[in-house]
Amino acid sequence: MDERKKAIGFFDSGIGGLSVLKEAIRLLPSEDFIYFGDSINAPYGTRPVDEVKELTFKAVDFLIAKGVKAIVIACNTATSAAIDDLRSKYSPMSIIGIEPAVKPAVELRKPGKILIMATPMTLAEAKFNTLLKSYESEADIVPVPCAGLAEIVEEGNLSGEVVNCYLKDKLAPFINEPISSVVLGCTHYPFVKGEIVSILKEDITIIDGSLGTAKQLKRKLASSRLLNEAAHKGTVTIINSLNSEDILKLSYKLLT
Ligand code: DGL
Image (cartoon, rainbow, N blue to C red; front, side):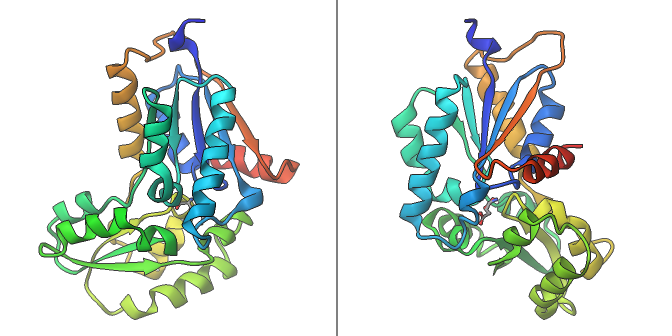
């Protein structure tokens, strides 16, 4: 088979990575995508690192068995736990990860705090802390661990009381503070962006890494001459370890 015609694999602990897939579809409309969400084992963000690593390797093996040409780890938590090991095991396959978009937030050079909302694991891991160190003299960066928020999204609560109460409580310490921007460091969170905006200020800058990750995927495919340049529209296949109609329905809805 022509390598360029193979699908691109996407992986997340659940439905969050669909926020990244959505950008990738817009950027690479001719490509076929296979998305695997491990909702039965979600959330990953409050698990021990070794467990997340093991689950991520299993998911990547699953996607490789489907014959994909590249893989996007559309999960900040799984990226922090496993990206280096994945790249050394599966080289030369392109494996693209995602991490909290701290650099673009700092480069805004806006006064106030930069809030980094992410899972407890992402914020505790070395990858994020190295990133934090390299920017801490330039900006006031505040990690905001959001245990429980990915579960709320997994349950389909994208607006309304449950998510509103959670976010009001989480963001209460910052309501009267000057905020430079909010970085969404978990791929589940862009789905509740509207609620975050309504709690903070209307003109708040929210940054997430979805578009940057999709662009990096495109660059990688181009440099390894794997871009599918067919004129037709590609396909999207979603698989979820929960194997329920509801989760698949919600997943396809999130892509629209
Ligand atoms: N979507 C994942 C991320 O980007 C994490 C959600 C979870 O805790 O499973 O970090």
